[in-house]
Image (cartoon, rainbow, N blue to C red; front, top):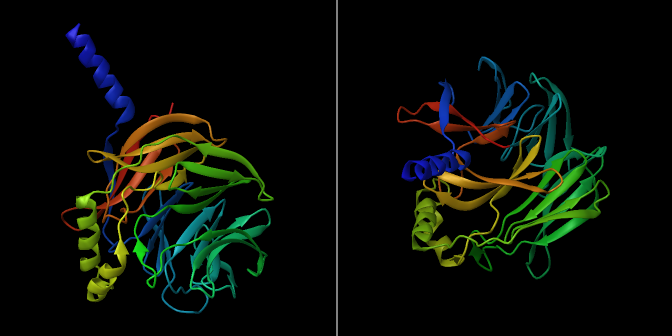
Length: 334
């Protein structure tokens, strides 16, 4: 009876926890920031560049971009969005469109202040920008843009509470917009709630779940302070920032929303050892299962670059020899 119970526990463990394996090392990478995997291509951002690799043999197909304002050049943080046979690269107020082998097809510029994260949708684009009113209140805007990136209308105006003048509450909420096929998913993750809109921005579904949020404790506060003091860009202002920085009692319920083309993955802030919690839903919002995936963080805020593809989880992890290894983890999603 005891052996049978141990076997059952072991099987349950395997159904929830998974183990990854290293499948390749990238010698040429120094500071990768984001990674997307689509089809048989791996797209990795590094400062003002995007490296395009083959997922089949890991050969470098092309590196695009450099710092600047000209064609194929970027300013500010890069956000990439591979879709079908195109690669959309967002930089500051500019959207650059490449084919899957890295040839520049066209570039669009927006006059909208701080506009970024443009994604094609329904013949137009969805993007976000920020707004500050006369009372110095800050708002995050989700907008529809036409084909020359002129703002057509504001569809969501979300209060953005953090400002240096009024204080910075870290991990106050998680706000994210995901565009998948003919739907738009809007996450405001303080509670476990995701609003799903159709192409006209009419809300037609909601993913909602009772969830006990993870407590933000003393160790978390110290991690946030240590991260600030070690940040090359901010450490000289650390004392001033710490006077304004506020800490929550709990993390948000949702860390982020991601997909593998077939399922939605809702990441939380709950850890079990070196594994982080995901809830898996189908694209209509029906719950499928809970899983824990081996996951590495660079800091309390940022993870090592990662992505999902089909039933596999990929993450770039720097080893002791300062080489970047691509780790593949097979997921049981049935």
